[in-house]
Length: 249
Length: 273
Ligand SMILES: Nc1ncnc2c1ncn2[C@@H]1O[C@H](COP(=O)(O)OP(=O)(O)O)[C@@H](O)[C@H]1O
Ligand SMILES: [Mg+2]
Image (cartoon, rainbow over all chains, first blue to last red; front, side, top):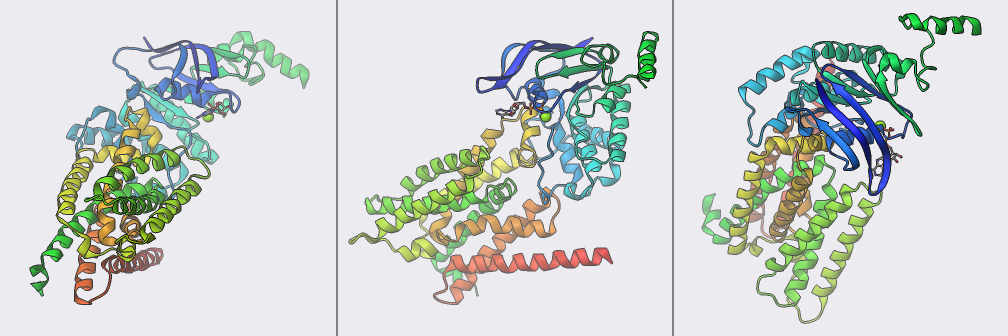
């Protein structure tokens, strides 16, 4: 079932078009990676999907039961200042805001849900710790948990592993992968192309002049993607590529 | 000891002082954490300018001129800061000193009866019936906003981008905070002084952040610290004649800030061992 359908979308700031005429579809259970060089408008695209950047033309269609404010979001830069006083629990709970109009207290159901999600992403022990004192990897888990509190249907991550060391990065990736297998649809912007390819079912490549959308397999055989991975693709028709590599070597 | 309350002006000062302390603390937490501290400082100077001009023009209640002017200024200062421009600080500093200069200039024109000293450093005698009504209304408003929207205030303060993505109209919150701050400052500055009111906004939050590591505890601690300092300051200035109340309150705030800083070092030190 299609969860999100983007058609001929153009986005930009104050009259300046940054992203133009792009189309892609995300089905339930997909893992879509958005890749491309710096400054091609990936963050702008993500903000457009969330309704934070107004669109010039085209369409963003969300399936029934999903709304723009019901997308779990993990933004690009963690702008939290070093001494912000906030506990992990306070931050995780703020993910529920879209489902609650006002009040000082969260419902019992929300608290149980949060507890379960914290267990799921492995931050139960950090519950009462101060956010700013955690490591980068722990902080990203907390913010991921907050996004999951907003929804476990569709989460949108913008370069979530920037600034993480390789171990924290691969731990974060495997957590994402597992969540995806459990049914969470993921859209992730990434500059780490090889990492993204390993996990994604689909790739959206946003280049300066061209863009590409398709399954990861299609991407690896496309004009834009063929240079990325010359070996290791399991399909039969790729045999020629490995040969090419050997010949070149 | 309690003969202090047999003076009606002291009773007024206590009521307004405690209420303003609560508002300053609550709004201060948000302003400090959002790095809007400069706005508080700027607004007090604009308030001074507006009050002086209103007094010179012989308005019976200068408050009614100062309130809208400062609210408007709050909105503009917020916009300047929100855009994240490099020279936002500089712009605010310019606005504050210009407003201050205009105020001093107007107040010094011959034939006016403005007591500069009182405007700068505050006076208990400046508190009138109007102030009580306004500060009660203001406090009820601030408390209501804080309690009803506590979770959203936290979200907007902590991470505005995420809050916007989940559909919160963050600019409404920012405007609400700055307008409420404007009113707090105008009401508070005549008792506590133009130069000292912004300390009341900034100190309690900063002091609390020394020891408290959760948002809710910072909020609660700020209110307690703020109210304590105002009450202590009022008593002190009553029993030692001629000590201006604003300065006394700020000194209490400074003392508690230093105390909390020491305690946080001790806590850190003992944790390491
Ligand atoms: N708030 C903004 N106002 C105007 N232009 C912007 C804004 N944010 C980003 N841009 C411009 O949009 C382009 C794409 O930026 P961005 O979406 O952040 O790229 P990416 O995430 O792919 O690195 C850049 O050229 C940048 O200068
Ligand atoms: Mg980006």
